[in-house]
Length: 287
Ligand code: PMP
Image (tube, rainbow, N blue to C red; front, side, top):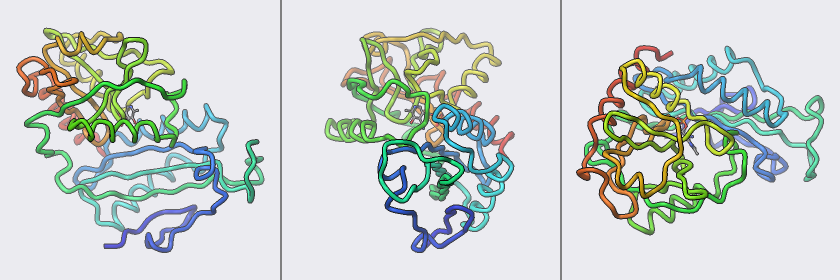
């Protein structure tokens, strides 16, 4: 079934949506994105995603295409036009199309940014059967650029990481730099030791996950101990539990790392509890 998508002010059938071959998103990966999940027709953590988008745009001196209120209206219109119940809304802003290829940024007064949004329907998104079994990950070297805190569309290496995981019969890959895990290909990484939740501290090395922020807040509110520090694959393999967070997987238990079982090799109590709290609280706050 054809979706209704949004391109620069227009709602169009997906077949009719077009952007220029000179768009800098296409030529230079000069663009940023956000993925907001939708549960029961409502937006999860919209404010967090809108705020991070502003930050990504600011860090790259890219113009803001419209106000946060307008963005919210577009998200809601797409949910309605596509009768979306569970799934995601993908949003991308690029530095636009200057009519030729040039490394220098075009003048934002002359070249408007490109704004594209589309829906992805995932019925039962919050009831993923993988939660009951947990997922397996492999470790790979993190060879990405040094500003992973900016959510750019440069996703070639994370895509390669997913393919390396697939080739190894695993679900995903955790990236490792100087002996420490940075993050998953499209998620933040955690381990649990006793009642302590350990995850890498925020810096330019990782994406500042919106789900991460919410989950750590809920964990602290539930009197769980949180330690923001780096950890190695060895430490993760010896941990009681491991898990990942992202806007589309929420909290997902990790039960195997490089072929070694984590804990009992089944989803951990802390991860499952955090998933429950996260889903309950963010559904309540959904817009
Ligand atoms: N790290 C990376 C590299 C990601 O691509 C993502 C998902 N976009 C995340 C972490 C998780 O971020 P969020 O919780 O905001 O989806």
